[in-house]
Amino acid sequence: MQNLNFEKALNRRKFLAATAIGAATLYLPSCKKDDTDDGAKKQEAIVIGTGFGGAIAALRLAQSGVQVTMIERGRRWDITPTFDTFSPSLPADKRSTWLDTRTNLPLEFANMNIEKYIGVLERMIFENISVYAGAGVGGGSLVYGGMTVEPNADLFAQAFPPEISLSELKSKYFPTVKQMIGATKAPADLLTTEYYQYANFCKQQTENVSGANPVYIEQAYNWDIIRKEMNGELPASAINGDLIYGNNTGAKNSLDQNYIKQAESTGKVTIKTQHQVANIKYDPATEKYTVECDIINEQGDVVSSTSLSTYNLFVAAGSVNTTRLLVKAKNKGYLPNLNSEVGNGWGTNGNGMFMRSQLNGNSGAKQAAPPVLAIQDYENSIAPLLVESAQFPVGFECNCLLHLGLTYNTQRGKFVYNSQTDDVVIDFPSTGNDTSVSAIENFVNRVNAQSGGVLGSGFLQGVTKNFTYHPLGGMLLGKACDLWGRVQGYNRLYVIDGSLIPGTTCCANPSLTIAGIAERNIEHILTNDF
Ligand code: FAE
Image 1: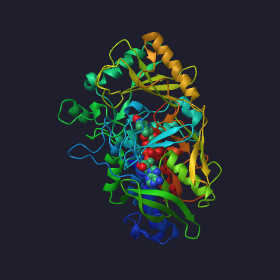
Image 2: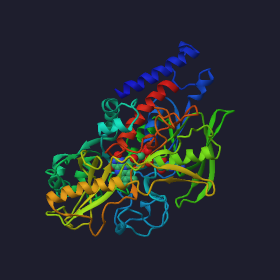
Image 3: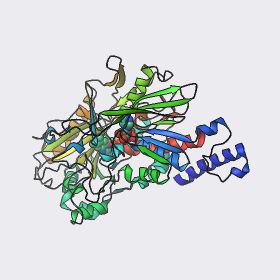
Image 4: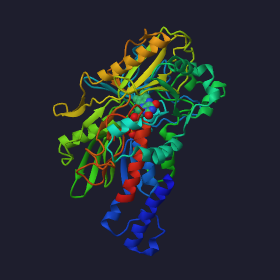
């Protein structure tokens, strides 16, 4: 179905080229320059960022014949024959962390000093909230858990513009994304091993709790590779619980293994790594965008700079970094026509991490990535909630479980430009995650009343309220952008990443929604603008 749509877009381009320069050109590649001004503008594009939005934009543009330059601040992280591409979780090394001298996981006991390096996981610290994001070719997919979860339909109808149809995403775009990233549920033979005892134990602990509905979820993982790790044919990585700093056996289907690999195989995509975009500018005389980049070494020092220009700019640097670039461009007068919605509507997807401990039963000494179980608590009296059962690979029986809660939280922050520091920060209320904490406490109280145990452990007290793995918003669909990600006030400037999303993916991890909407938007843009 998806291919058919791209074929349609391609045929439309061929038709336009043919009507412009004659039938003889009908079978020429659709991006050959035609004799209209517009034709010249449709030959090339720049995509900033190689995460979900960027990878999807690049592949679909390239398949339609457009020459694409992708700009990425980080490095490539190809799986090596020696299976040692990424830092292990414990002990971590410099490859773990983006330009910091200490790792900075929310679980402080796991942190350690390291050399400054262009590692995979970035933490951005703002006054009331810290935000995590991936860095490198593949973006957030390098560090993510592969959890591929569909939004709750009732909440989606409340949060998203009515023109964005969840049923269309579910029937058309989510299946494409899942097929591309290989998202499936863990097979039964793996779930019954000691490595997923923690998930099965969590299911037992929650299945009789009123309102709670534990479900196994789909994962962008290659289960055959995990099986090989389990039977010793491959070194241990996922089965050690390694996830957040990358997976060394290739079990995690990160975007460099699917969308980006296919995009590069078209021969139309070039990726410029260690290019950190500093500014985006527009010249009305040439109708071109200029992307100013710092070229950085592996320690993050700027070694030189360069400027690239394009008629078609797709910004996909993730919610925080995309919005920062555009808020800065508006305030510095580089993109003065951006509207007043730029920087608004940012949310945390209601993230709160917590543990339950002193449990009556074994959670398992060996706990493999990825997480496979989530508990739907949509009728929670404080706020709808999804609770995920995360691996906690400390290597001994702790009779405890680690969780990430995703609450439907309507509190929003905004991005603010500071002219003195020439920087953009997130202004998020200090009480912004209070509802998430209360909803999670409500859930834990019900579970503990049924199954025993306490909230918190020696590793993590209470529910966190000060960080998110799921930054969303800043350049919302239907506000700062139109309903397809075209930035209001400019032609041929697009946002295609998590900054389009209205602060929540409605009790689901964000990647599937971001990717599904990216597929939807780029299809429309290719049909109508190229
Ligand atoms: P993203 O994937 O962040 O890509 C942005 C790209 O832009 C990156 O490659 C950056 O390096 C690059 N970039 C940024 N600034 C610049 C610049 N100035 N110049 C050049 N390049 C730049 O954006 N989601 C799920 O659905 N399931 C999960 O299991 C899950 N687990 C997660 C675990 C962790 C620890 C974290 C941090 C996130 C997790 N997420 C998960 C969230 C998911 O990774 C995130 O929503 C998406 O990656 C966001 O996709 P975007 O396309 O918006």
